[in-house]
Amino acid sequence: MRPLYSVPLGIAATGAACLAYSAGFEVRSFRLRRVEVPILPKGARPVRVLQVSDIHMVNGQTKKQRWLQSLAGLRPDLVVNTGDNLSDPLGVPATLDALGPLLDFPGVYVFGSNDYYGPSPKSPTRYLKALKSGVHGLNNPDGSGRRGITGAVHNPWEDLRDGFDAAGWLDLTNTRGRLKLADLDVEFTGLDDPHIRRDRYSAVTGGPSADADLSIAVVHAPYLRVLDAFTADRYPLILAGHTHGGQLCVPFYGALVTNCDLDARRVKGLSAHRAGGHQSYLHVSAGCGTNRYTPVRFACPPEATLLTLTPRR
Image (cartoon, rainbow, N blue to C red; front, side, top):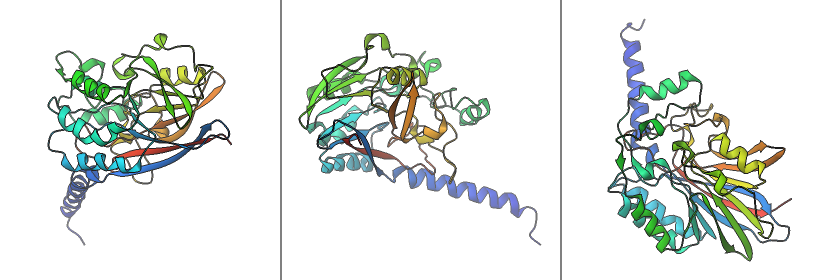
C-alpha cells in the first residue's frame, strides 16, 4: 500500500511538470493555423491573408522574432495585425524587427490595450475568479482592462504606429480603408479596442460600401456588442484576437475563459456569428504571445493563421 504522503507529492510533481512544459516548451512551440473562408465573388482567384495577433513582445524573445520573420516565406497577399503587439515599453524596436519582412506586404492593423499600456503584475487567482464568476474572464485577468488604466505604464505605441504607417500599412483605428488585392477592391472597417472601451462604431457605421468587391471587419477584442454590429451590417468576415485561445486550456475539453463576453466555444479559430438576421464568419486568433507576467500556455500553443479566401460556394 502506498503511503498517504505520496499522493500530495505526486500531485505536486505533476503540477510542476505541467508548469515546466507550459512555460518552457509550449509557450515557444509556434504553429501556423490554416483555414479556408468562402467569401469572394464567384470567379475570383483566392486571396491569402496572414493574421498575426497578441505578439506581446518583450526584449530578448529572439525565437519569437525569428519565427515571425519566417512567416514572410508564405508570401501572403495581405497581412492583418489584430493588436497587442507589446508587453514591454522597450519592445517597439524588437517588434518592428520581427515584423520587418512582413511589412513588405500590404497590411492593415488595429491596436489592443497592451499596445497602449504596459501590463502590471496580477495575482493568478484572478484567472480562477473569472471562472467562478461565469462571465468568461470579464475580471480582466491580463490586468489591462478598463479598471487597470489608472496609473498604468504608457507604452510608446506612437512609435509602433509610425513604423507601420511608414511601411504603408493601413491604420484602421475607428476608421475605414481600401486596398487593391488580386484584382479585387477590398474595403476594411476597423475599431479601436473594445476591451478598454475605445471602440467608436458610430464613426464607421453603415456597413460595406456598395462599390467594394469585399469588405472585412477588424478589431482586437471580440466583444459581442462589436460582433453584433458588424454582423448586422453584413460584413462577411470579422477578424479578431485578444483571447489567447484561452491560454490555459484543458486537453480534450478546451478553453475555460475568453477574457471577454465571447463564449468559450469560439475562443479561437473560425466560427459563425449571427445577429440582426445575418451571419458573418468570425476568426479569432489565439495569438503568439502572452502577458510578460504570465508567460505560460497549456494545451493552446502560440500561433498565426493563414486564411485563404475563396469564392462563395
